[in-house]
Length: 246
Ligand code: CDP
Image (cartoon, rainbow, N blue to C red; front, side, top):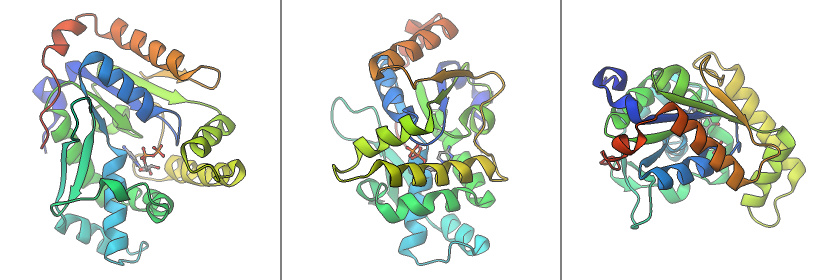
């Protein structure tokens, strides 16, 4: 396992954690674009793991079988194509499965797979390795607490349940009804907050940013101010440029 904290790379890491649809990815992407860094959304790895479990029809409650399948599968992250893209695509055994990781069956099972302790250990090792490759905005649930506890900037992005459900419904098809999105959002949050392995919680030294009453632009501006206060020599850090993919 590569510990990014030991490699010194954490000087240009921003950890963003928070509940479902709190704006982590959209704020993280905008920040990455402004700073010239890469965005690493760790949720794509848990989604890829859930997709692989579903593909192989392994019963979700068989923790050992799920862990064995994930151990035997090859997960890779590669730079998303496109000149302006800052994100990563996820590959399982050589296949780009990025287009599938937002599908409904993945959405409804990902929290179960993400609660598997052995799966988390494998994913965290992978994530620490990836984060040691350069300046990065790293987004997830346990980045500031477990994956990169020495990150110089930790932001816990939050918003009220209603606001988050409204945002998630708006992202989905025009037909998505807010009430059922609210129920699904609550269910996933409850699982993430109550699981035994690395539950969703703000790190002690994280700055909580509640975006319930902020526009997207205001949320991004505030996050950028926090980063610039915490990393004063930011221009020097940015010179490291976007990370190479692995
Ligand atoms: O974008 P959204 O908030 O809907 O979810 P996501 O960031 O794509 O993460 C999907 C699921 O993966 C979460 O609900 C967690 O169960 C899990 N996850 C995690 O456990 N730890 C992370 N670092 C990232 C995601």
